[in-house]
Length: 460
Ligand SMILES: [Zn+2]
Image (cartoon, rainbow, N blue to C red; front, side):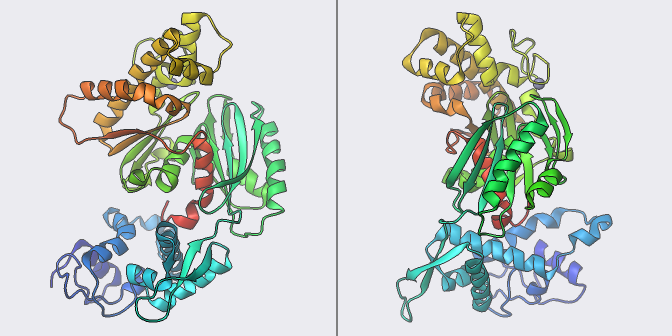
């Protein structure tokens, strides 16, 4: 019998002889048994499945096979039948999201789930307000199928986007469309900021019809997303803030807290360019008051210890930024050379104009103002330095830039790409460098994505 790595794993786990044949080795007579028990989302006992479909079904689970089983965590790692149901539900919801309008029969065919299982899952998704029936589709011979779509008329996501200047509280539908939003000034007094957020959230939650809403919170600092503790926000020197626990207690709904750059990376996965959504390895770079990066490896965020990875904003790119300090206090960080704060600092030094904001400088650069163009050109040069370091170190398929700087993408793109190309001497695989399509508020889309993540993602 030919065995692949999936089946070695299956034999080991089940501790009994199986009749599972590898989809890679035997594409024409692909049979399987016992898959349901192991949570592979495959239920029919004997059926032909194309190799591509088999790979698709296994994909969410393949990543676990390379990991050492930690017996200290056995209680939390064992897959229960409810976990399998949840995963199948997420798979079905993703099919509707990506392929709508789609029928139950098409989902069953594509996923190899039993028709009755699909119908049961769809029933619960309709009941929970995620999916709606939209009438009959074209018949392929028999009865016309009932087509399904995502429901987009109801609030199912609530996002809180805390930035160094403003805090936005917004509601959104299942497609990520913002339905309502309110913008407050962020107070450096964290209790004041927290109380303002809670009072706005309570007004929203008392009107919520959907009972499965989670609140996503994007924070401009270090966050341990497992515990939901904000370890450090440099702009305000907030430390060890148990934001998840405090917000859940105050509002009475589950809360997901993450770093702003990580939130954006998740938003790129769910709502970004179609070509980005298909990419497995990419880095999202947020250029704002500081610089943050979200690293996506194999479709998941790389977090490092206690969520502290991705601090490329503090990598060493030069001896002296020329008067601009990084938020960490150093003058040699990427942030001190290429963030909006750095651009503002350089412009002020050159023109002695301090009362100007970043939007105005970008507007001047678009009009060809000499000083603005010179300053933006320097920012572009340092942006390229940092991106080159990311590319040579991690070889991502894409680097996606977000933040207000995308409003002058047409001004900087050519120079940026040229400088990146001329500084990479190794023959590395191509990395696409693109502007984000998340719009003016990428961190808000990040917060909304955090709110939706458990509905769509099989593993975080
Ligand atoms: Zn720094």
